[in-house]
Image 1 (tube, rainbow, N blue to C red):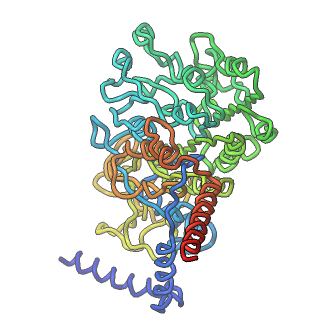
Image 2: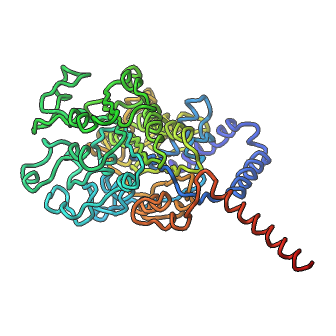
Length: 532
C-alpha cells in the first residue's frame, strides 16, 4: 500500500513538473481548435482519385509496427531539434489509412516470408515459405511443385510495365525474394543452402530464380556472396573469408546476368562511385549489390562506399519511369526488423527515419494523379513505448518514473529478446548508462536469443489512384488484390474496363467535359428551332 501511495505521489509531482514543458501556444484552447478545423476542412475538401494507376510505388517497413512508427516520428523531430511528438513524417501525410491482419495460415504470429506472400501475391500461406500457397510445407521441396503463386511484380511485368526491387537487406531475403521466387524455404539463398534431396526433387535456390523467373529491370540491395562460386573473393572485403562466394555449382550469376542483358544497356555495380556514374536516362537494367550480405545500418553506413536508401530509391525510379506504360517498384526498409531482433531500438528507429526520407523522395519524383503509393509494415515486434516521459524527452532516454524496485527503466523496451538482464531477481541499475547509444540493447521481459515478432495489426497508408481502397481492417492478402485492381494488372481488369479511354493526364476528363458541353449546346439549338 505504501509503495502504491509513493507511486501516485511521484506521478502527481511528474504531472506538475511536466506541465512546465508545455509550449505557450498549446495552453490556449484556440490553438487546438484551429488545428482541428484545418484538418477537418482538408478532409472535407478531399476528392477521390479514381484514375487507373500508371505506377505503383510500394514501401515496406519490415517490422515497422505502430510503436516503431510513433517512436520514429518522435526521433525524426528530435533530430531536427524539435520536441518530436508533434512532428509530421512524410508517411503521416497519406490521406487513406487502414489496418492489415498479419497472421499466417499456420501461426498466430507470422514471419516476413508468409506476410510477403500475402501482400505481394494475394494469398496467405505458412511460415518460412515464399511465393507458394499454404499447401506447401516448410523445407519440403515436393510440396512446392504446383503450389506456386505469382506476385504483383510479375503481374506488372506481364502488363508491360518496368519493375524493380530496392532493399537494405540482401536481395534474396524474404521480402524482395517473394516478388520473384517460389521456395519451400526462405533460407535457400544459394544452391549451397538447398539440401541434396530438395535438389534431386527439382527445387532451385532463390538467387538463380532472381535471374530466371521474371525479367526485373532494377535490382538494388546486398547479397553478392550468394551469386558467386565458392571461395570467390569479395571485391570490397577480399581478406574476409565469410564474405566470399557461397555457390557450390560453380556458377557466377553476376556474369550470367550481364550476358543475358548483352542486347541492352545493363550495368552491374557494387560501390557508390560506380553507382553514381549510372545514367538513368541511358540505362535499361541495373543490378547493384553493395554488400556480400545485408547492407550496413544507416547509422553505420559509409557514404563513400554505399548509397543511402534515398539515393537508391531515386535511381530506381528514374530508370523505371522512362517506360510509358509505367512501373512497379518495391522499396524495403528491411533492417528495421533486424535491429529489433537484436533489441537495438536506436538502429530500428534510425532505419525507419531513413525509410521515411525515401518515401519523401519517391513522392517528389512521381505524380500523385498517376502513381499509387503504399506504405505498410509486414509485421510488428513486442516493442513498447511506456512510462511517463516528459514532453520532448529523448525517445531513447529513461522514464522519470522509476519502478517499485527504485530503479529507472527506458521509455522503449521489449517483451522478449537479448536484453533480458535480471540477475538474482534484480534489474541492472542504468542511472549512469547511456541508453541513447547506437549499441545499447533495450531491456526485455523474457530472455530470448533474438526478439520475436508480434501479432497485432499493422498500418497501411495510401495515396494516389484508388488509394481509398486501402481503408478499414482487412486481411493482409487483400493488399495485392487492391493494388492490382487500381493498376489494372493481374486477373482483375474491371477498373480498366470501367475507364476505357481514360487518360491518366486528364485528357479523358477534358474530352468528357467537352462532349457534355457540346451536347448541351445541341439541346439548346434544338429547343430554339422548335420554338421558332
